Image 1 (cartoon, rainbow, N blue to C red):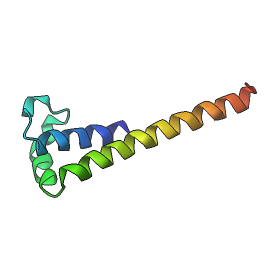
Image 2 (image 1 turned 90 degrees about the horizontal axis):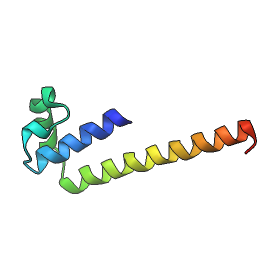
Image 3 (image 1 turned 120 degrees about the horizontal axis):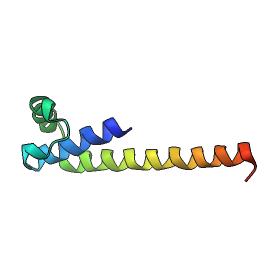
Image 4 (image 1 turned 120 degrees about the vertical axis):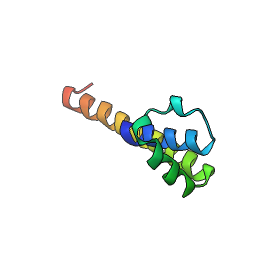
Length: 72
């Protein structure tokens, strides 16, 4: 999920006309500029937040499964 989160972070940065040197995926700056044009800022932010939530959900399930195996 980290890869997707870094991509959306960069899309938000490009959409906000932030400094290109701050991009994580600087080698894909051209593709990011093209992709950013297809999104609205609120959709980019919503998608990044959804990825954060999915990552947290996975973490919680991982902890629960670990506890179940060790009978916490």
